[in-house]
Length: 272
Image 1 (cartoon, rainbow, N blue to C red):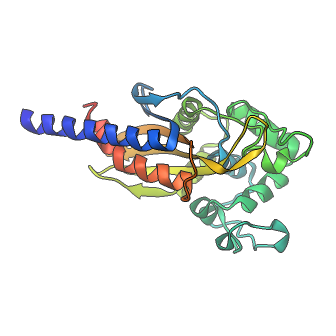
Image 2: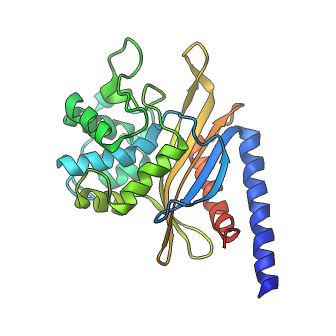
């Protein structure tokens, strides 16, 4: 048995090294994993207190707001048809979308319809109540677009440590929204199988970094994967963020999601 445990620990170290190598090549990064119940930090790598735009990970908070306000009704209601005025960047987004496919396919226009329906006052009240990052919904300077763009490489910022605190509060049912809103949000969150009987639930986010001049750098992405993982009765909460230092063609959020799902069971096995 000791031999088996030793092998698991060595295997975990190899995965930790691999994760560090991948994210170091891509640029600055953070990975933080905590026990959901106790808040014990199990893994912390990188600058996890540095804020960045949440990009599409903000859909977790938007889902809670939408269900709590009754704008979202259930997993498949409302199903909204695509309109040309939404100007979706991707062909796959130009389809009728419901809350489940919104999260699965990370469809931006559906988020923007939701925030417009909430309106600026109710939107700000929800963000304040959730204590989400810096709570800044001003949007891009001089463009008056906070209602639809604050979370898209813009004014709203949150750190990986804050993401973990937010998700932990949600999993524990301690956020100022209805229990039903929490249950409905958790039920439609994308989930992924991992080794050692872990199931990972979470939301990716990808965006463009801003340079010192404040302009978007079309060659440099940042990517998130934020959520929770379960194995039996155990639940851990995680956030991982990478900020690329060179141009990489694949979407950063999808990339870091794959790395985290692959590495997480071994990282946790090392903590036994």
